[in-house]
Length: 522
Image 1 (tube, helix red, strand yellow):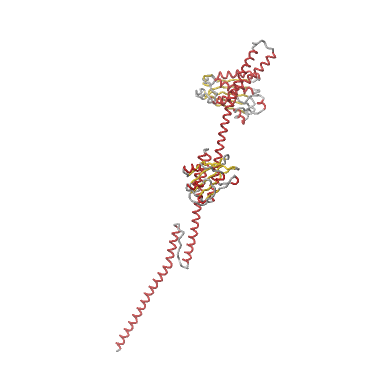
Image 2 (tube, helix red, strand yellow; image 1 turned 180 degrees about the vertical axis):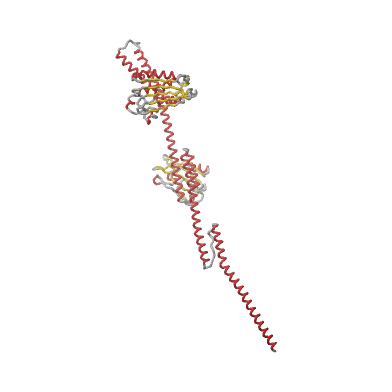
């Protein structure tokens, strides 16, 4: 019995243990399942929003600012998602502003480049058609229109006429050109002070009396903008752009075309001034030619009777008509001196007129520099002796024979030496001649009053003399050095002066030993 009870107790204990173990195992499994469920729930509520935020940030980095993060969490992730959405909106607005600003800058750069090209065209050429075509092409391009015309206004006819076109067919250009367009027809105003840009957003609905409206509409254009070309108190023309689509023109476009209009006015004014300068130049050239011809004719007419007068005085001095009283001889001598002086002036004027008319020619032949110096000394020595001046010459030995116009070169040296003697009151005048590097170099040096540096270039110009009392007392026309300079240049040489006030002057001329045979005319 006892044994049976023990067995029963053991079985009861084992059953209870099995039940407990089952309960424990079930609890453990349930706990694990609960943990897994909670883990999944937590994972879904944390990781998914993070992934969405990560995806949105990638979209923002790629430039997509339109999408939003859909996170319903009210915890920190929800706050983070809201901040991401807010940042995305702000970045989107900033991006649009940057894009707009970039486009504006690009447009400004394009406008500046176009204005630079227009300015270059205005300043580099006086061909008005080329400049205006450049302006109207750039105006159409930058205003994003389809065609354009620059009209020039005739103040005498009170009409506009097209001068430059862009983007228009030949038929339309011909049709517009054949129509008379007055101030009222253009629509910009009837006086410079009242002129202003005017636009027609849709010509097909326009009821104004704009003269070419029908022609423009039939060509397919709807919107048109007209900007006047103005100068102070004057209408110069008009810049017109057209486009196929209707609509008002932006204020920025109007301002841009006003800039192009100003460039057009400048181009038209430059061309007008150039035409006036050309016309005045032709008039001056004609007047100068007539003056030179008149001087040449008058010099010739004066020289002929003057030579006769000098010839008759020579006969009187030589006693052909009997011995003259001493008083008469003195008078005749004065007549001769003044006659020769007048003849020299006439010859200078004649030479100048020939130079200006391009008719002064060189008689190219062989000559001796030594002989030119001797002839010059013979001519100026009496005056030098009378003034008590020392006149010396230094001519290098074995100088080569020159090839040029001996008479004209003698004229040059005589002018230089004559001036030196005339303006030197005491001291000396030296004439030196040498050959250096294929050129004859002839120097005339004096101890006269000298020439100020500011006057040294002036004295080689026509009708110019050093403006001081001592010089004016010597007389002269101021033509000698100008003619001498031209003669030397015709020989392919140079003439210059070195001088210091109070220390005298040194004139130096250089001419090629052998002048080119082709160099004969001025």
